[in-house]
Image (cartoon, rainbow over all chains, first blue to last red; front, top):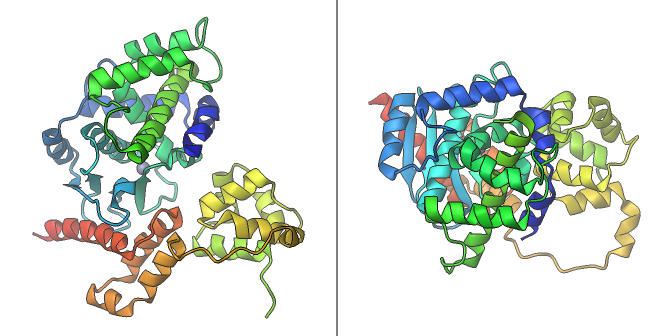
Length: 233
Length: 145
Ligand SMILES: [Zn+2]
């Protein structure tokens, strides 16, 4: 719960300004559009069967299997760079024990790492990027994670939907900060996720899991709002 | 034995993570000179910086706080040691299990990757490390087919 409160308070525009310039964002969007031509125009909902296809096209290994035991559920996925490991191709792992919508978001995030590699060329990169539930706040302090999350936000909230949801919430057009989501925006986001991704926070019967998904919802929605407010995309 | 200062702890951890002062400063959102001041004990970090230091360096914030403010120790009543479910323990247990490391033929390179998981501070069971390791190894095997 504390994570959600912290995310609710954070200013996402500041994080974007600090880590991702307009040009970097555009280059990420156009790289993403090569994978998903409808990116930022239509909502992207990934089917499990598509993951292998996309990985094949990107020439990355895909490991999609459930990991439940011990701390397994806390792990959403990871991306292993080939240069720092014994791999000939990078590896994307996604934990399929999660809700299908969460699996899709994780895959999209890891693809984001793959696509953003060019943005960070020349910088020292970690050999592996791990995606743990409830670590969203730390993504705001890390350009590599933030870039990967941008792709998820654009996939889930294409521009027409983002404008509909967020233009209202910042009363009177765009604002220079993306801080507090209005109650109306939260309702619209919940409806969007329910209709588009069959995510319903009130019905799974797993309160702790729901809370981490809720943190994700706040994070990706605020990030999308930040992109719209700062870059008008 | 002399107890380590906050600066020494920070420097040691930063070097173990192979970060320069400048790189750490960038992750923290402060100037490199500020990191230098912290490491040589000329500044005390603010509470929010302490939390970020904990996040970035994978250290627990409370001991860091006590190192920065030794005078606060007297104010805190003694508490029972927490049950050993903390991430750091899982890593130590994993590293200390020589039979397991040998059985799984874990290489230094693989340990470096896994240490990164530990630094994220979300793991409380050594089995988790093995799951990650096996996922990577499977892909390496596919590569060699
Ligand atoms: Zn990531």
